[in-house]
Image (cartoon, rainbow, N blue to C red; front, side, top):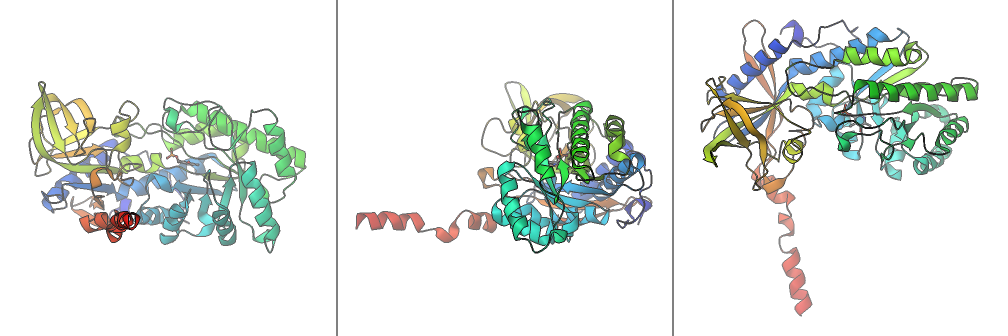
Length: 474
Ligand SMILES: *Cc1c(COP(=O)(O)O)cnc(C)c1O
């Protein structure tokens, strides 16, 4: 086990690791692709897999903890809750928990995954714009922190709190606000626009006064939450959202004459650079920007929660797909691979917002060399737009080669889209021995088999519809 791989309990004091070295990251990736080919993780019958860099995940978690430890007073209680939607795989949640992270969940399914990973209720935060009464009741009973989204939900929680055996047993309950600081370059991922569906829109007429009143009336409402993101938002915009949330906390506490707001949930949303192997911006840079924008938030008076997803996992994963055929159309070479819209869904449907790098390897998993030729990298789905890359300069692919779609550890292979009834691929974690270069794999999720797809698609209800037609006729 290398030093990098050694597990650290949640209690281990974060050191000050350097940002992940891009050369090491690329070297680990090359070693993993080579081993996936030689160890038979990918072959003609299993033409696509997801790979996760275990050392990379651990390092990202440590960088996050170190970044906030550096800017916060030692008295500050910080919970880093991983946004489960970014990589909804139980072993990943468990690995992050071993590195001291909790979970941010937004559905009963995500909550069940966090529980399956052994993440304690006290390190779990429930956010969702559409929580049912049953979900809220369950969260309160289990001691899971809840961020309330809107006035109607607050009324539901009021009723549950009235019915609770004791106020002391309640988990932290917060209110999500939308500072309406504006959006980034990707409309669909901009949560703090004037008309965003999330939280209480602070600048709307009467909203701020309503929020302050809501806290003054409820001693159990102790947390403010804002998630100003995500990909495509500049740090200054996110910092402005956090600053305004802090100002609101101060205003509420001044009005309450005490410490009503005890903690602030800063959300996630740190963008990822999908064009290189480096982490830009780093957690450390973002933490400093936040500290400079709202120093009072870090002086020990407030507990902090973060909810990062993409920035923790994106660069730790890749999709590896076999090139089934190569062809040419209209003079342009096309590599037909097994990675398309079913895995790189956002990239295929919104290529301008979600460009991904593709790396070319030969059938033995060695980097393909040779002059770069503009080519399309296509997926297996039956629609013309199923392209992961268009006119991409790469060494010319050959049948049997491996195409690696990089930075897909968040929101990609854990987010299968069932188009063409294509199966979910297996996901393997890997480690690379620093001394020997030996690669070890661990299965994180088995590939879906065809029987499962048939079952999910109503096989047990085979005669449901033909039976109805017969009844009508009789
Ligand atoms: C999606 C989401 C996150 C994580 O966002 P990233 O961009 O992946 O960091 C955090 N908090 C909330 C409320 C979210 O909806």
